[in-house]
Length: 420
Image (cartoon, rainbow, N blue to C red; front, side, top):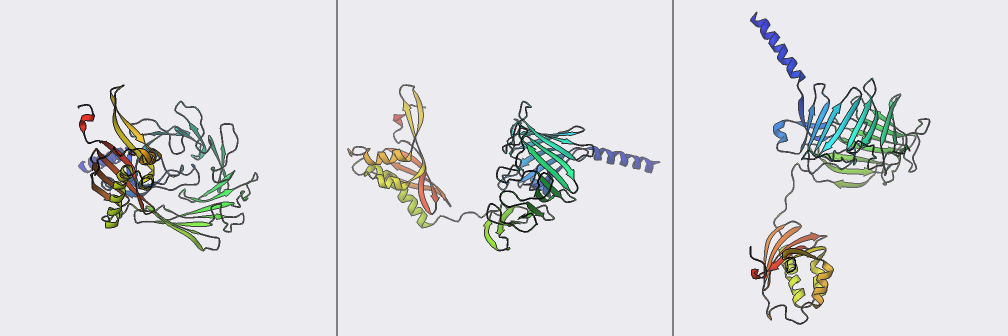
């Protein structure tokens, strides 16, 4: 009797557990540059403990294992593509018999637009559970177009292909994207829902080349869900050079799925370019600053004051970055309020040419004391104290050359300012 009770209790507990919502953690989203028809999916599953120490996504599912929420805790390596990244902190997904609705929120639960620049996505399904339509809406539930000028996607099954058409709010057909001119398209999926190929079709659903000579592009994913190869083809399936000057690309990933490199090839499988993308698996930290950098930082920082003191606009032009933001803290007698006024590089060059022409702005033998507070690779912070001023400088190194990009200062004599 006790054995029977235990079996019944075990069945009840098992049933209740099966009915609970579930949560899963993933390092990445499956890359998708094909169509919003492709289901959202996570790759590189991790446990909750690991998720606390690394970039990740949180997927929450209902009892039917449908995604009801995605929390975006991914950083540094997320690919910014409207079909491949969320662009929001949270996605909430709700379901009815024939609809799936996705809404988007920031960390304060404020409704925001996603990377397609829309506020709500509504998918429609047929009786067999296949997607047939996607429409976009704003916060007032009015129809709206995405950043690609698309209001509506329409999908129909045709043999092995998913036929996709896109329309704007005027019901005019729209190309796949602003940078890739496929009109009516056919999407070929594998059994797991991964896209294998994408074809440009004419009105008779025959494969044809677009205005750049490309009739299809094909994708290869590895067993971990990484998008590893993509290639461009003519109407006969042969390699063709795309509008960016290559025929196919091979992507590289590190051991935890970060995209770290790309090789591109021509139609003859000759490598024409390679690129590396930094990984967050093991970041390479900067070494200690070199003596050469320290000397140059000191020269330029002091050069700013020397340029004013000795009427040297050429030196001011050399030491200041074109994006200079120099901020003066002052006191407005009329409003009786303090202000922060910005000065540009062009103004600083003018000051260097004439501000001290009477030679009365500085002592006869000026004193300029400089302390380099920190140098990290291409950025540095300096404190500069002269007879009149206390200043903090930010310098940056671009193309091997240091320059002053930010500068804030106040008078050394604090009696020039109102008392706290």
